[in-house]
Image (cartoon, rainbow, N blue to C red):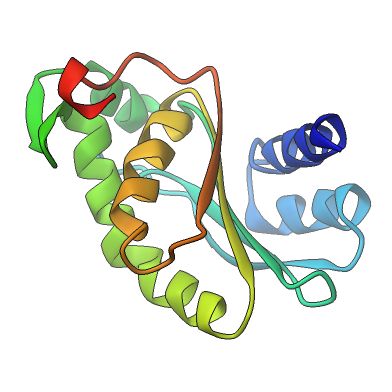
Amino acid sequence: SLMLRLRHVLRLLQVSKEPTPTDAQRLLRQAMPGAELVQAELSNAVAAPAYFLVCSREAKTAYLVLPGTRNPADLATDFNAEEEEFGAGLGHRGMVRSARWLMEEVSPVLIRLYTQGFRVTVVGHSLGAGCGAFLTLLLRPHISSVFCYGFGTPPCIDAELQ
């Protein structure tokens, strides 16, 4: 069961590598029949990561998919590795700021989906995995069952946040 779930979320990460939302939707139809690309952002701004919000009405699932480094702005986010206060500890400044931006950008939609009975899952790779981990912690007070799958998650927290 876990292996099938991991295979499923890895397919979603493949969708996030597409250059346009239209291409992502086309691949999504093959990777996850019945799912829709609800919202997408292919940002070129520092601390404003790309994301894809995928929903399946039939399965009542919502996935926020966060790809790894895609462009020079993401590299700037990667290299912004100073410490930033987060909760009871410290985190990677670029990832913390990206997670806070995502919280402002997509949390209203995710919370609405959750209140409508959708299971909310964050999926990320590399930079997206680090941002997703922080975002999941920010979402937890609003979406108690939120879960995050991180692939290639970089070291981004101090011992206090473990």
